[in-house]
Amino acid sequence: MNTLNLRIESKTERLSYVREFVSDAAKKFGFDDESIGKIALAVDEACTNIIKHAYGFSPQHNIDIKIVTNKEIFEIIIRHQGKLFDPKLVKTPDLKDYIDHPRRGGLGIHLMRLLMDQVEYKILPNNKCEVHLLKKLQVGK
Amino acid sequence: MFDVKILENNNIEFSGRLDATQTEQAEKILEQVNTSCTLDMKSLEYISSAGLGILLMHQKRLKDAGHAFRLINLNKHVRDVFMLTGFDQIFEIM
Image (cartoon, rainbow over all chains, first blue to last red; front, side, top):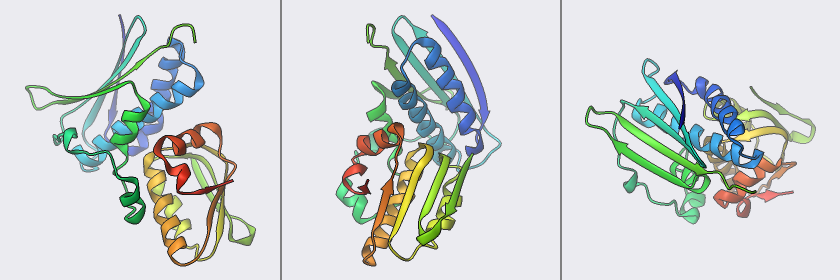
């Protein structure tokens, strides 16, 4: 098992750095360009949600990003100490309603679920919250 | 890095990476469009859901006013994001 760690400030200006960090790791792990693009976008969406909803755009907080690889599993764990929320309350958006009432936001979690093999939210005892994003490497492809 | 330009014929070009940091810059230009418009995305390398959201808002605004809003020259990654979200069924993509 290998791990990589990155800590960023809770600013959207750091998103491009996060995408580079995750893309480099995904490339070294063996993913093709299409999968690398999907993983980087999913992590961007998760971090954007944390910056926006958990920290309310307040930049003095941290977001910890850990990549754990084991055999064919590539997992990104994103930890924060901001406002907790229940992802089960986030329904898959009704596209017709979204078209009729377009708005900023509301697609991020839906997109993460489409891009990754598994998306999980965990609440830790010390008021920390983790988003787990998992992608399997398709061996032989 | 993201850039947005108004071209001749009131068309627009996006280039670079459109994430949550850059939506304000994109929106300032899109707000100025009040007629049918083509958005050239040939140099747009990346788009997140924040970018999709503002494109949809302005597509609806223009459509409600009787104008067209076309997207052209999407690269594979950007096109894939539109397809994954179903937005390829909403926008006129050429």
